[in-house]
Amino acid sequence: MTEIKNKHVQLMQGNEACALGAIKAGASFFGGYPITPSTEIAEYIAREFPKLGRYFMQMEDEIASIGAMIGASMVGHKAFTATSGPGFSLMQELIGYAAVAEIPLVIIDVMRFGPSTGLPTMPQSGDIMQARWGTHGDHSIIALSPSSVQEAYYTTIRAFNLAEQYRTPVVVLLDEKIGHLREGFDISQDLEPEIINRADFVDKAATSAGGGKYLPFANTPSGVPPFVPLGQGERYHFTGLTHNQAGFYTADAEQVATFMHRLCHKIEDHVNEIAEVEQLDCAGADCVIIAYGAVARSAQEAMVELQSQGYKVGLLRLKTIWPFPAEQIREICADKKLVVMPEMNMGQLAVEAKAALIGSGVPFHSITQVNGRLIAPAPIMQAVIEQMAEHSVKQGGGR
Amino acid sequence: MKRLVMKMKYEVRFSGTGGQGIIRCAVLLAEAALYDGYFAAQSQVYGPESRGGSSQGEVVIKDTPIYYPKVTVPDVLLCLSQEAYNKYAGDIAEGGLLICDSDFVQPDGREGDTVQLCRLPMLETARDKLQNELSANVLALGVLVGLTNVVSEAAVHRALANNFKAKILPLNLTAYQEGFQMAQSQAAALNK
Image 1 (tube, chains in turn purple, blue):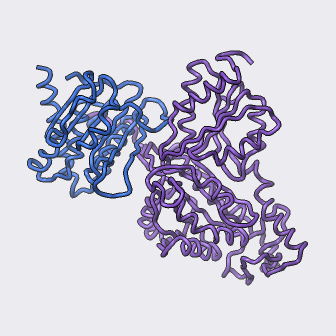
Image 2 (tube, chains in turn red, blue; image 1 turned 60 degrees about the horizontal axis):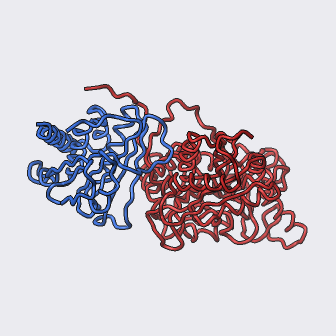
Image 3 (cartoon, one colour; image 1 turned 30 degrees about the horizontal axis):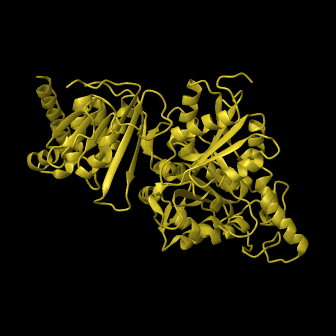
């Protein structure tokens, strides 16, 4: 019998990689309600968490799930859940609570075709705007979007890190295609990922243990107040009401405005640290394709094929959706002759990308597909070729 | 029958009825391909129901990284139900290989003249000879690998051992060998 050539590789599903990433990141509480196409995450965690002495709690619905997560996070757990569009909708009110009470959470949303029950087993990037604006009122949020199984692992770890670092809910937006895709997973040669813990940000001097008074919602220079979990020596108040630095209700105009600005700016001011994009052959390209999630895989295939036909095409892959990397997109695309953006929705993120390019004069073309199928490379290629012709960019022509 | 040889990109689609183990079959092939040092991507399309309804699992195998992870034109198509044949047989590549269950699928030629057709009583063999109809998916994998040699025996064995508990592993190894032998006899008969 012949030898096994690759001994380290495993076949892994995107959802399993998320669960594995959560375990690696130190997640210690899962509160959730199973829903296709995210169920494999709950199944994996239900099997593995008890062995690790961590908590898996199946709740009666998604509203209760996020409530349980919030409670767990308040007392120091790294809490997370896995859901899909309909469950994510039910969570929205308490996502707002978590945003305003500045509670770190990770929500893995494996996006399925909607609205409503839709096509439970089929993909759509339908929750892009729900992740941003699903809860009411001004707030900021972080949302990440992996394009491969191995990236789902590292993205989930990063989601937990960012949640702790910025005291905020973080959404991992997978689409069904990446959630259910199985492919090679081999991290045996990788460096150990950095794991960020809540305690890393607690300045002991700012707590009563250090002699000062602990302000759970302090106006710190970074915008992120240190979070001492409940039950660890500090007694303070959480509320969904607009609150002062001590955590109690206030309607004082100046304090309210200060709070609101801090809540938004603690994330938006750090867009360059948070938002990651990947550039493939963008320098020197005539046309840049902007894509994220599974669609970025189709876009890369289209890019390679177009390049073999002599077109100068690059790919700008958004690994972070929110905060939106508008400035980076503008820098990379402003001198291009064409920007094309395929999405498995009616153009939810194209609105933002187009806005980022206003005034640059670069033609922007949005490709949308809402039929329950992953966009294939062919329609992306066709759109690039047609649009290049329309804007008279010659094949293989120099700049 | 000529053996299909490995090329830059190899696409396989498994199709049948929900509950036949179609997706597991695709998982096993993808896993074996990884162990052989290839890149592999496995995905599926299924309905909201867990049994019944059509089911399809697919695998892309390449010697370079896989971007678009879906099968477009399958080199090999396995059909364990008529509905699956009707739905997918027209997609198969020119000169591709179509493997059908001889009792449950009646081909009507929609696959085209260039396609090599292999009809075997896979479900019946699993039920009557192996006394376990549930092993038909692994038997079918044996047929597929026996005809194509797309992955090595060592890799398949490792994949089987990784997917089945010790109690049912021997049955699945037997089912795989049975399918592999059926493919060998079929190939010999066609080469006469």
